[in-house]
Image (tube, rainbow, N blue to C red; front, side, top):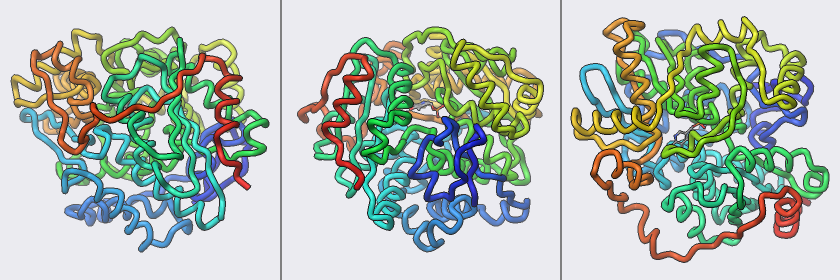
Length: 471
Ligand SMILES: *Cc1c(COP(=O)(O)O)cnc(C)c1O
């Protein structure tokens, strides 16, 4: 499989190349040159496979010659063996029509483990083969950081530098990052910064010759194609259980950086019958405005109880704009330059219509979120986290809108374990969820983290001093 950049002027790479590259050299994001497509009979034949086998079958066309099928399956087995539920991503029924897809049974309690546990192992295989080292730089609003650190801590040939906005992640999220004791793990708390500031710094590092000349920088944010690829699998897993390919299924996705929902878009391009894909946002609603009115303009970030969705600029939206807008990289590069200069742009008609063919969007404020949490608790005894609650709010709105035939089930992606956000859950429901025993003695372990000013030069110097050069 060949991969091309959304901005049209970076080298074409294979799967191994895009996995290690992260961002393309022209500032764009990599996508497969074309979507692999499964016939209805091929999808039907996937029903009932254990998750790791399903994963290897769905990912094989994207991986191409970069791994043998046997090695891919082996990596899936070890990655998903670290999950606490044998089904890996089990479905839970809430009422006749509404379902939850629990994606939080991995080591750090959020859906990001599903992709990152695999990505850590892909890195290790590809680096060993090339005899190279990788310096991972990442920005996190909480969940990416802990999942990425868990995925690469102690692995050979990798250093990881993880930036988070100081004071803007939950205590559980912070401790899941800062209590990992491994010499290759470096946590940085950015003072006075938002997640978008941290993400902008990471992007700048990828274009900074002072760093790129000495270090091979790698990305674990969802700009990394391999992450999205791994997330495509659970859309298939859920839809197959609910009757696909013979019955269409709708999904509601709590959205921040647009990675998870884009994986659903990919599943649909591959032939999975997805009736609707709902982009659920909190009050940081740039994506809702873009999809409902064509207005992609960034405001300022409002901190909410769902911090992983407190984002104004969603990196992966560029992938959708590219694919729906006729795959014209140079035109998109122009459009994105305009956006970077003015923090605002209009979607083209092709982009709007292409997105609207599959996607809808909804926005939930704090009271919508609390109501959805209480509804899940009252109706089905399920305690859900704030991100999932925003997705469920949107799913319920879709269910009552009359836009879908009644027999189409609606699946909300449950993106985090409620224990990860216990304070917010307690405020909404009066019930304080516990933490699963697999997180162990999180609150008695010592933390290691460096506070730095939200200033690019200070962060770049810190990384340059501590990373191991690539050759
Ligand atoms: C990362 C995250 C999201 C947002 O996912 P994107 O792929 O960035 O859109 C939603 N909920 C939780 C709990 C997350 O960790």
